[in-house]
Image 1: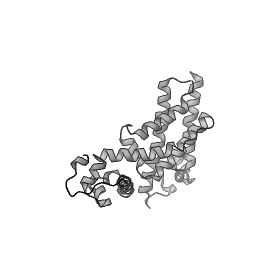
Image 2: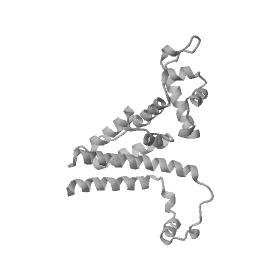
Image 3: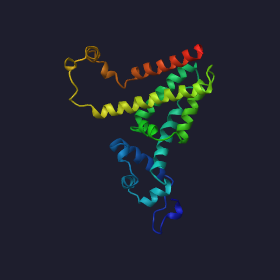
Image 4: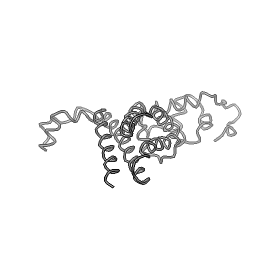
Length: 217
């Protein structure tokens, strides 16, 4: 819907309304998740007519695309440009992780929609730039970046799910019947889920595999 669809008496959208809409959308996501975000709820949250909302965004998908653009563009501008490719790739993953964690459900949004948003495509391009000098085929570079990005997104999505489902029903390690798992649980390693150290280890392992691949072919 464009401004031509506004009826007489409808408010003319102001230049700041679009920012207000995306801010409200992030708020609804944090409160209710992706299932709780609707155009009607978004309009009610801001206190505007639906027609005003549709003047800026033709549908819910357009709102979600704008949110993805926000979080990815915020991350990309902070990616390091100096250093070797391994360190740049590692630090870029940590930067992206922090940006996603500051925006609850942003990882889920990126995983649920095709990578068509400008910011999402820019993110992929920046990661490809980092691995482009490597002795890999273009197919392998694309595979490497896809696996790497999927890991970061899954890590953040799973961390959010874990935070939401934590309760007092977690069994004591002595109640776990599997010996190896019992040892790991007893050492408190389950509490490292979602930590920077776990993410760093995972990213470093992927990076080591990429490096090994270019030296074995």
